[in-house]
Amino acid sequence: MKKTWLLGFGFFSISITWALYNAFVPFFLDHYIHKVSLIGFMMTIDNYFALFLQPWIGNLSDRTNTRFGKRMPFMLIGMPLAAVFVILIPLHTSFITLVLFMMLMNLSMSIYRSPTVALMPDITPDHQRTKANGIINFMGGFGGILAFGVGSTLYGANPAFPFVAAAVITLICLFILVRYIKEKRDVIVPVHTEKQPKIKLRGELDRTTVLLLIAIFFWFVSYQGVEAMFTLYGKHHMGLTEQDAGFSLTFFSLFFVLFALPSGWLGNKYGKRKIIISGVIGLFLVFAVIPLAKTVLVLRILLALGGMCWALININSYPFVVSIGSETSIGTRTGLYYLVSSLAAIASPPLLGLIIDQFGYGSMFIYASSGMLLALLFISLVRHHGKSTAVPAESIQAKA
Image 1 (spheres, rainbow, N blue to C red):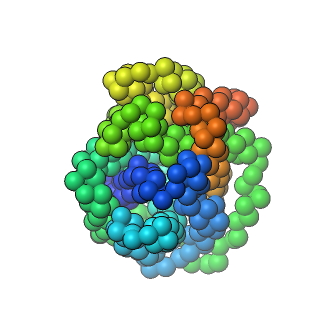
Image 2: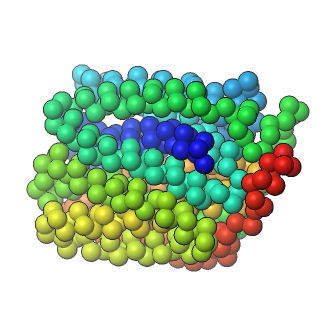
């Protein structure tokens, strides 16, 4: 598990960058755009890149074989580029330059996101992947805490400071990954030099996978809409300052982190499907109650409970998708996972923005709880329970 903790630095850099992006870029856009639906649309730029690039890049990384490994070349290209463009976002001088820097940053992150995620199952035996996903999401969630907590303080001092910090952290994390993760040495399934068989996306879409991906789509519809619009909800609906609205999201991230490792353990013990269903029900209830919150204290308590429920869902969902397929399709299935989450992130903020424009910010969590109900319907139709039947790691390595 030492390698998993080290790999967690990749997720740490991704999470801190996205958290800052989602929390503070809407404020930049708010200076130029005065319709929430249009702000929501602009916040989906990254997901258009993910929609077209991530399944292809994930599949390409499955078939890549270099002296650096399968996944590492994508990180070596994407992470430095992302660091440059994330610094440029708060330094924009017009709406055009803001959008340009947003697009270039998102393109850069699309290059390495799927390969970074796919590297976890590469170096982890099947029966330990849910626990490993808990570890790397623990690291990622800690990045979210820093983004919303420390990042809010830095933003109050100067809007550029949190973005510069994210860029520096990204480069430090890349150094750690290159220094300590050696794919040729650490992968569980060895990379063969002969030509690998081409993996077709269509062949991965069995009934169980399709139902699971639809469920993932709907819980991300809820989550992505709330994540993209919450700071505006806090500012315009509850009367919070921009700094306090961003800081409130720290409670969601903090309790996600605290529950990340227990969620992985619960998924291994009781099955991923059962634990995911518990989280979906819990997050539905949290979203349904948040509109009744009249004070910041109550809001932050509910966000803390929401973070715990999101951990039950998110920690177990990606290993669930991977476990249904073969070891040679990890990158492809990683791409499929990000395809549906990106579709949700493309559709949700603009749709939620239109609803808010029509009915006000009070409708936001009614929308979010409805998405969770649809997710519950489709995950209930999945018959695979997500319990690992893999042999111990020692046996796998012996065979390798």
